[in-house]
Length: 349
Image (cartoon, rainbow, N blue to C red; front, side, top):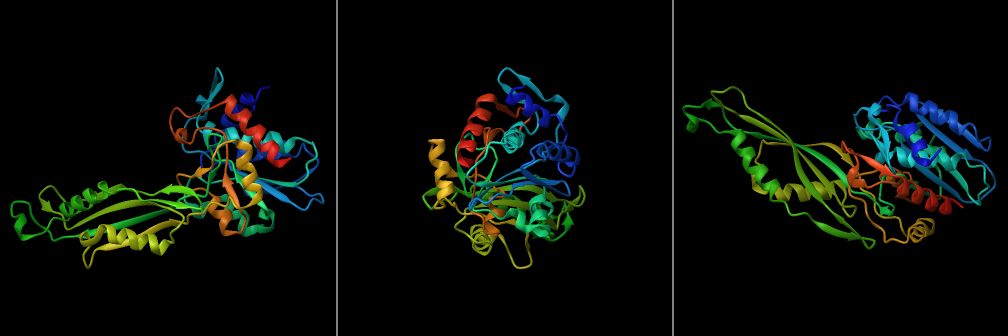
């Protein structure tokens, strides 16, 4: 079988978030074929570790869930594997599984982590479940997260903040709007301000990160003949790793400025911290060298931030074009899988 066939075997297993039991069972069974691995199932997460006497331990992690889609439509077309999760990130998972089962001795200890529920709210993350129940299994000198990066190292990650805003007005009859105040019209001005946002770019440890701000939902209206007295919107703010939660929040409030008045609602409903690049770590800088490509900043949030929180230097590196993630035409190519396997094997060697 080729690497595309191996990857297809995983892509063909439906594993939308919260439905990872079947794929976890397949991965666990495959890992147990290597007697050199200590394999542990924690819920729908699977951790496999070598337990020799080498001083250095490296960790490779990947999530087993996908966004919604029909796994039955997965297929190989030429040198490409098409299907939900092919790029994000079952192509990388299949390579991880291949290398984990390889009995060739290495000069480092290796931990392989296959975890559930990454594509939904962070509070449900399988990686956090492992960190809570068996934190010692995540101890390592350096870690790679197999998110799709196009064969380059994508260092650090952005933080992500969701803010719900409520703008207030005063109800009135639509034939006499001057007796009230239209909250939806107020929201229009705020949305125009958000649409005019100019992304902030900053360099952290010589890696550039560009922030983004988008309105992702709106809500308002009472009845066809009523001037609405309340309108809501939710903003998603992608934050560079030079900023804390409070700093990002202060910057967002300043940007919206006089559009927010006393009595309006402004609530952070979700926050996942950013992570700075960890390329001063010699193991991760060696990985960059093996790719023969410069490192770049990760666009978006990943569990590199989780590893940073628990004190493990980490970076993103995996097969597939990150611009294809979550798309209906998602795919990963054989050459991408081959390159990922070659570089990762050398790094672990």
